[in-house]
Image 1 (cartoon, one colour):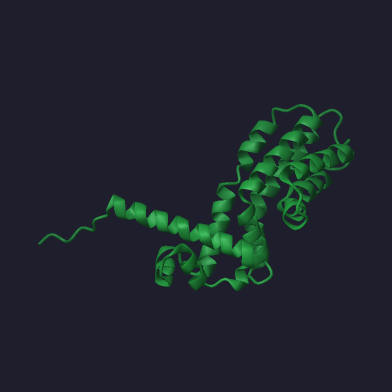
Image 2 (cartoon, helix red, strand yellow; image 1 turned 90 degrees about the vertical axis):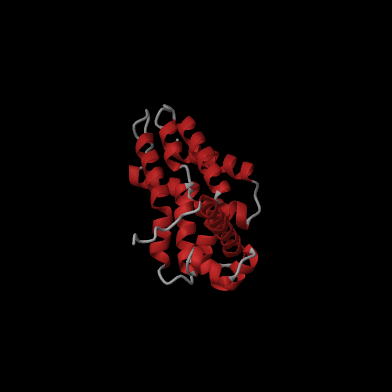
Length: 203
């Protein structure tokens, strides 16, 4: 007698994928609004319109959900594309303009994800590692920008490392969060001021 073969239904897989995406989307919104520590799996299930056991079966525990949110945020950031276009630019102003525009686009599209991660840090069992995993590619992109700025004539007066630190200070997720999230600035205003601050300081 031949062994039974498992049958994977494409429709069932599509339904499971949609459920997983919905759970992650609702969890991101809840974590960003309330904070990771104040959200339960039952809250996520209720927001997604599913049973708690479906959340566990589809995505896992609350910690698993946060890890998936981090991975999705990194994958959707678009930093590599921003860097690709920036290396063709040959003046400080055009590089910083592209950087302001690109980081604004990434932070605006991923704002809820960044807020969910930021609010999880104080209560997460390994917040430092979580933040490093969430921002490593971002920091690498800004460091690459600093190195590119130092190939231009004239280069910034500061070292590459200090230039990279300043780019992170201005264009990292915390800078955008403070101006837009905490202070109520528009994204347009934040982009303009951060760009002009960078140009003025690195002149």
